[in-house]
Image 1 (tube, rainbow, N blue to C red):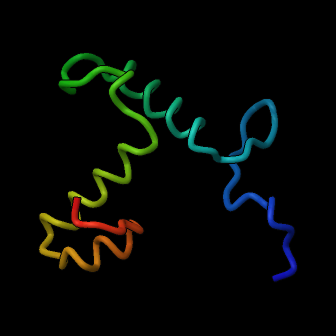
Image 2 (image 1 turned 120 degrees about the vertical axis):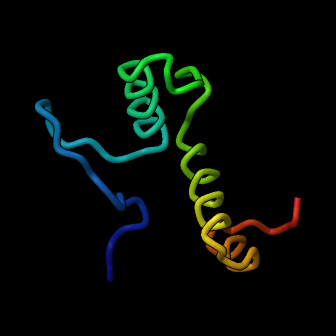
Length: 81
């Protein structure tokens, strides 16, 4: 593809310009959403991060009946821990 190694995979357009999508941007967006939605969610903004999406995705696959070996492969987990 000849793209340089530092080429971002995703960008978002904002009123101030283009931003690269990073884990810290995802974490900030999730925490802002939790603040906006309020206490009814059952958790606090500081309890969510970009990594929360990885765990939630794995749980969604598990309850959907996907084999744990496939989940580990998709999530790049290397152990059963």
